[in-house]
Image (cartoon, rainbow, N blue to C red; front, top):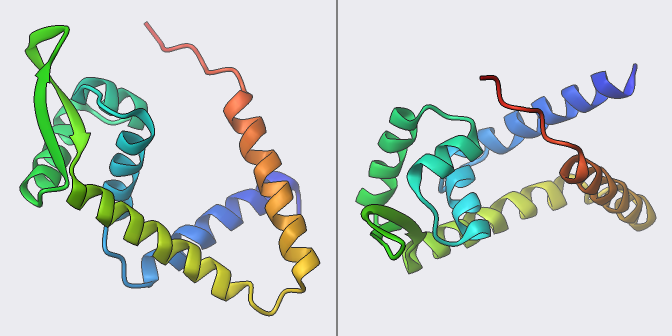
Length: 142
């Protein structure tokens, strides 16, 4: 198989693998909380753009996260008409728990791999992540 086919198969298998195990957060909620943790405070429209979602879809997701006490809205110090989003302590706890669960699930699945192969996989995945992060962003249409 070609590399691109193996990557697609791996990403699908990883998604299915994690989804089939009891999650404390949905994949979508995990992604939003993770992005908020990485960026700190941000506006909902910036979050929607970063996640590639329609603002109305993001608005519903954020309302659910806020209802569960995972995020808070505060006035934007630069523009009092706007609001910025941030994680609450409960949101940080939920994110930490879900990260631990995901890492533990994958670690358990690799338990029969020799340590040197686990280390090589970690090194190559890190290199792949670096390359993807460094790749030029496509220009937005319009």
